Length: 219
Image 1 (cartoon, one colour):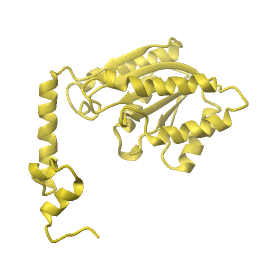
Image 2 (cartoon, one colour; image 1 turned 60 degrees about the horizontal axis):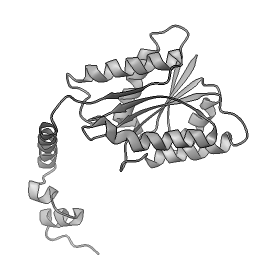
Image 3 (spheres, helix red, strand yellow; image 1 turned 90 degrees about the horizontal axis):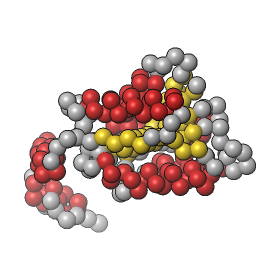
Image 4 (tube, helix red, strand yellow; image 1 turned 30 degrees about the vertical axis):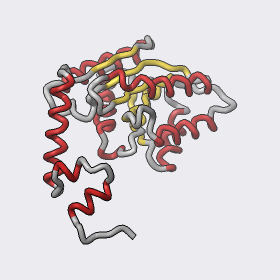
């Protein structure tokens, strides 16, 4: 069985999606006779390489982050190429999805999952399992990462067994605490870059830049 894991994050080389893909690959490789390949879908040549590799894959796992309640442009570029190559022939693989978002709730990913599902339906591509990760920008590197690893292991088993399933995971925190922790993180990041809270809360980025450097003007 060949499984192709495609990292379709706009920040692919340094993304959380890269780590989720790596962890999933480790889960899949625990089973004999499973060959895992990794690609990224960022630049045109990389997208083309990913599409070419789908022709020999039994399963394709699309890993990406939520962008404005939807899929990022990198996924759309991949879809465009897939639509071309499978316009007149049946896709040989089953497509699965691992999607993470910065929101606490995993259900925030539902619209993006529906977009992928609709694309597969229109192109005649079999749709398989889904893992929706909430608080995906924060959960890695914390004690709660074990929850993600357990969910990825379940996803791997569903891919291997051929039983389509939908899984969800998120940090087990009340929303108010998650928001407070997030605010603290970004305030520290702002301080590191010489920005105050007031500057970070400015309605427009240029306002914050001018507040920091009053002599600068926009031309």
